[in-house]
Image (cartoon, rainbow, N blue to C red):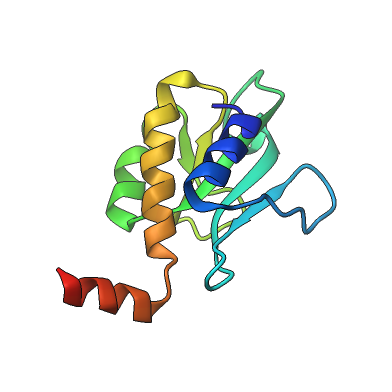
Length: 127
């Protein structure tokens, strides 16, 4: 999934438009109901993620369950979160079609994890 494909998907799924707070190619995906970030798309030098010969790549940062973060970080295409809390956020390399389904699932989880506490409690009462 490329950054443009990601932006199209989140627009359709969540009604989210990317925001560019730093006036560069780095974008924030923000919930409409509470303004919390559930995703950040960053242009990163591959060497900052431990990659050699990667040049500049696009990554998506998502909020994630700490146990899931630990299990995914060792897999190809997943990294300790770039410029975010490394226990609760995960970076995923964009541009690898094999990760598309995982990206959608992790974005859905991140969207849930960034919901306001009142919404989470209301959803729990309905269950």
